[in-house]
Length: 519
Image (cartoon, rainbow, N blue to C red; front, side, top):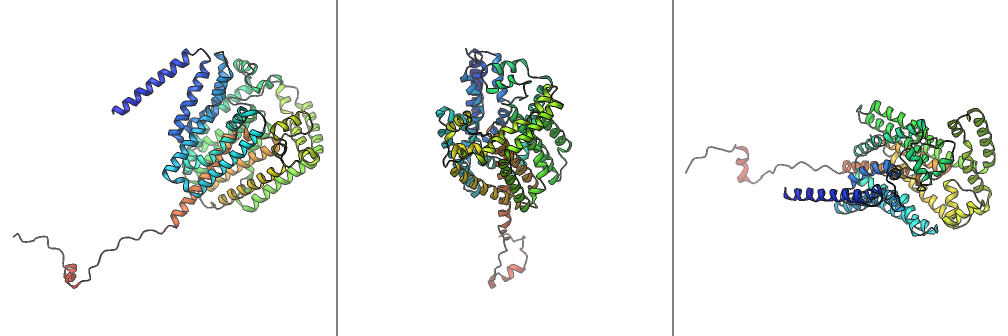
């Protein structure tokens, strides 16, 4: 009791210190609060990774809103912005350290699939470090690029260690959906009533690249997130997760979250549509359409072959597609362009930027170098209009060259083949349906990356992407452990000891006499 009281006393002193530091600080109070939150959440994550992962969902949904609200207090510096942006990366770093320490302590790291997942994450992070350092932007720019992007791939290892059963994963997904309901509703409000005054002031502050929205006919809604594209894509992912939760309860024989899942699906789809991000709508529509296809190996192979064929066809006939999209845009502007919303909806020619990059893949020899130009060289060539690159493949080809890109594609193909084979081996189990949903969501993000830019490098889409990959990994590990337990031979029941010596023959047949004579 004395120890608990001492800990409570120290916690109270710490809270008073934080409160006084925030209130009496001469700078921005929200920036000072973000500094304490970042350090505190990192320490909490090392001690309790699972609790910190729940806390990280709140940061994923509302940390940018916290940055936006700093304009109320004034005296905003880039140091304050840095601490707000550091909330999620520092929490994630603590979660990774705490999870690794616990896995080493309990011996679960020695499981083959978890160890392979960790090695894949380390290898991918090293490749990202080399790519970031080659960009020529300096150490700070490279660290920012890694913290905001590549670091989240460690969720592939963290999630199976923190959530060991599908029930725990579903409970966490329910929590994520509840946390992100206000995000979707606030984006819908922005679409209907416009941005608030403090948000307009934030766009004019120079602390964000979102000032481009002020040049539009009407600023697109971005809710509490960093931009409209991550907002729309995150809502599309949450819409699919809502239906996935319902499917899980149906497979386990319960009726929980029946109507609730449909309500949440409608809210998040409305948020996706309100974002005016047209391509993001594929992220909730594709999984619905592809679930029957992903149930078989032939269907999955045909699906990847179709997407690959479509990509090569778009590269070859890109100019014809550009002409067709331009005509479609002019027709839509003529019929729907009378209002600001109609004009934003009718801008199909934004797809032409991606098609120009695909056109250069097939017709521009400058795109094809063995080791690329680096990030800075690729940006300089793009600004000089020597090349066009607005999709993931053309960007990687310019930055790292065709040889490293070929190796990455081979490794990605092997990883996808392993995941699909493992998931198809789960047929007949209660987790098979939710694994199909997760594969459908990841496939939608893959298509989005290939045809419309690297959306999985933006926050919080990267968080959802790698969490779902980690959840899929956790379901496979859980089912494999169940199969191992079923294969183990059951221990035989202990047999009674038979005494065969003649001296004990009568003792085995005559009952024990409890009324022994005294003396």
